[in-house]
Image 1 (tube, rainbow, N blue to C red):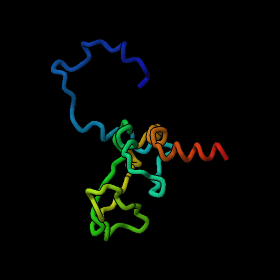
Image 2 (spheres, rainbow, N blue to C red):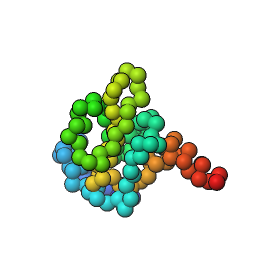
Image 3 (cartoon, helix red, strand yellow):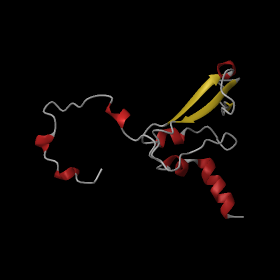
Image 4 (cartoon, rainbow, N blue to C red):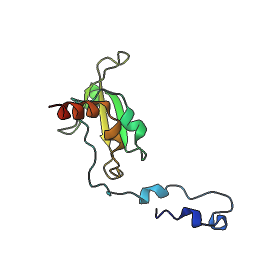
Length: 122
């Protein structure tokens, strides 16, 4: 993380090239100052936010309405826009603990870009 990776000699790496699994669970916990908030009224369900997230903290789900019958109050969902999935709901969830606050999802979002453009032209 300090940018000194080139100073690390190859002799320090494991001989077989393997590393222990599940070590990512100890990193990047609650380090973001700001995290993205999904706004269903702006979302066009393009999925770019999930694709660009380098830490896979953004997950989208398509589910049936009855699956969310016991969802907590305030759980955000919107009707899925795909004709293959009529009467389904679409939701995006962000793992706040793992988000690093890089804002790549906001930069790639076409709806956010449109909103920023309309604010700038006012």
